[in-house]
Length: 296
Image (cartoon, rainbow, N blue to C red; front, side, top):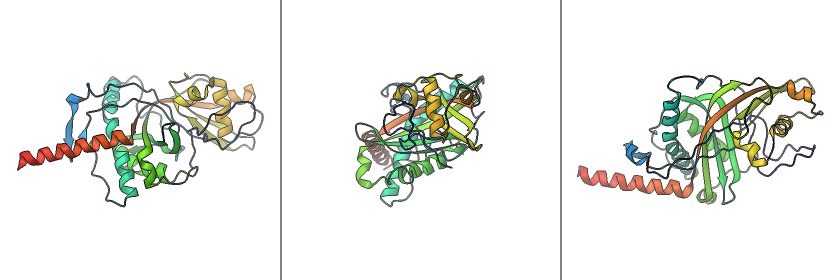
């Protein structure tokens, strides 16, 4: 069951909600960090199957997404583990390569080329989302992911294509558009059941709610961490919007909000523009040429 959490335009919370502004059920959250422009990564460069890994960091950001799963992903990165910080650091170091890989997958798909080589980053399973935006205004162009843990190699390959070509809210991305694209990869982590509908922090947590609509049907909906801040909402406004996006049409009362089961989570997210992708691709080609000269 697909659902979205990315906004295509600013939503007004005036008591009347529309279901077509690009926000809907199941989204993800991100505790994003800002990385350097490559100074810290330079020492970590290495070659794997002809691909340059590391070498450049890009500013992290958060985005909304479509979800293809209703599975609760709690426990994939449990809080309190001694190795959590190292795991997060390792993941952050790999995320530029993940974005690069998504561009490779989409470019080759659009040009009917063979699939890219197996990437170097970890192939551990995580919930993930891939978001495509276009132009200087970063207009949403496609965004789909899953709350089920997927092996990163196959998961990113699948959702790089699915979010670009099969997001039902948009027409498929074309060859002519690829030069104006920016890709974001979100790796979801730290799922925790909240003690109430306000037990989460704006700009830090993504939230996923479960509730019963006025017909008694169980529904879910989610927003990534940045959504509320981008829209200028407080917590209650965010919850009300999320209920509407999940299909709740009756009057929202304090009792309605208290009946929600809320799961909060964070994510690591990075983005890469097409120009940055091409720059890394050229570095890779130059690196391979230099290796060839040495081998000769």
